[in-house]
Amino acid sequence: MLVAAAAAAAVALAGVSAVRASDHLDGPGVTADPQSDITDVFAFTSPENPSHVVLAMAVTPYAGDAATFSASVDYAFRVQRVEVLQPFTLDTTARDVVCRFDGNPPQHVTCTAPGGLTATTDVGDPTGGGNAQSPMRVFAGMRSDPAFFDRQGALATIRTGAASFTGANAFAGANVLAIVVELESSVFAMIGDAGSDGAPVIAVAAETVRRSH
Image (cartoon, rainbow, N blue to C red; front, side, top):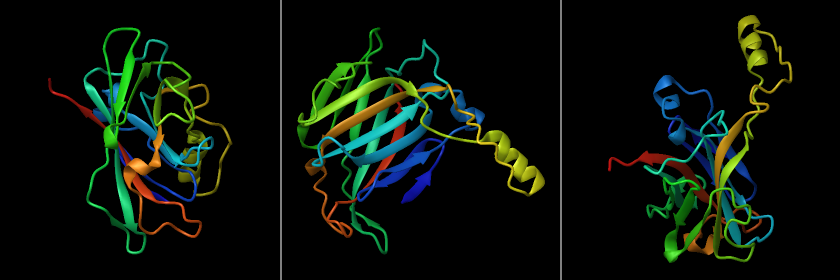
């Protein structure tokens, strides 16, 4: 279930199945700061360890080879437990996962989570500083843009009023900077309406906050 997508943040529900939210081609106020421009957010159960949840966000649309994460930005996953699905009700306790980067190449990332969990690794390290059994691990680095958008087809459809999709992806060949955190789902104390298969449900918002100091 997709909850919302906005210029500065994207929100998704994670539980029974993988969920994603996409936010591309923003206005000039957002695109002027590509290091904090969120394009996608994902939340899903780890395919390697069902007791873990994976949180991912992508920033910096059309990232080039020289693209870096900002040392002045908090890259945050705002996580809240879903107490009831109908009517949609969130627990008021924030269970944030926040990632920060240093400014000296090669960059390093440190992410902190509830329960005192923390993980630090080099940007680009494919192991995430651990393995599938680690309480928490994080990957940060360049990846292909996962979004698909038939821009020309969409514009033609709007112009003519008839379906005119071409199947061409406007983001083909484009890259983004990705942050992927895998951690024990138990740190979110996920209880409540779990759905038909017993899977817990959480609400996840990806947000970037530029620090003033």
